[in-house]
Image 1 (spheres, rainbow, N blue to C red):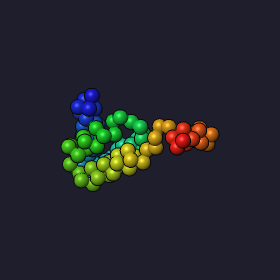
Image 2 (cartoon, helix red, strand yellow):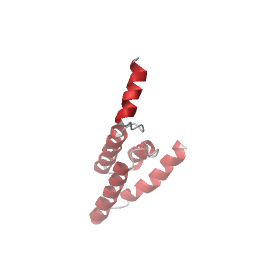
Image 3 (cartoon, rainbow, N blue to C red):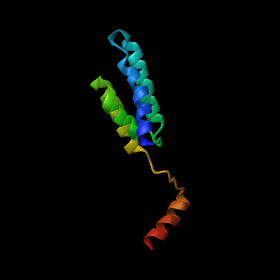
Image 4 (tube, one colour):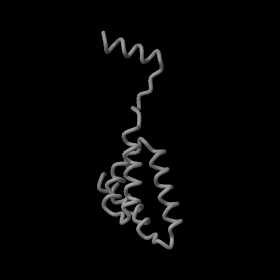
Length: 98
């Protein structure tokens, strides 16, 4: 699955390579959309394949660093999927520490 995910990400990200300097606004808008999607999808299984694809195929080091930074920030700042209420946390603490 990782190889096919990376291949899909390469196809999506390669569009940035085709946005030359004359299309700077297009590249900026596309980059902004990609970063916004990354920030809004912290639990996506495609974050790491996207980071691998960006490092493999993007020609612009500026674009690459922005996307990789967004992936790292989102991947490592995502919380655990377990969100406890106060009572659940107290009960869980009693079980762990007794």
